[in-house]
Image (cartoon, rainbow, N blue to C red; front, side, top):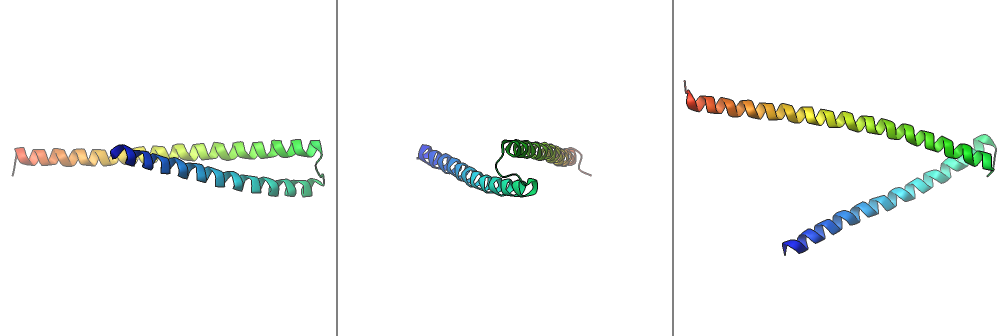
Length: 107
């Protein structure tokens, strides 16, 4: 029974990830069309190879910048999380030490 429950839990977890990925892809395609229209409107080029190349370079550059900042933010959050856990661990250690000290030397 445990094996079946584990399978169902894993299946639902993976299914959720796939569905989120599918919706993310649809959103990306919608934004892609909108940005293309906006880019073509601004550059007054409709479907030329040069405008397509410029659009691709622009989107790639923006994506790289966003990914760069997201990675930096993720590292900051991780460092903060680690520091918070270290503080909590120190507090627990000190509390245990104080309890043991009180057991040994009750005053």
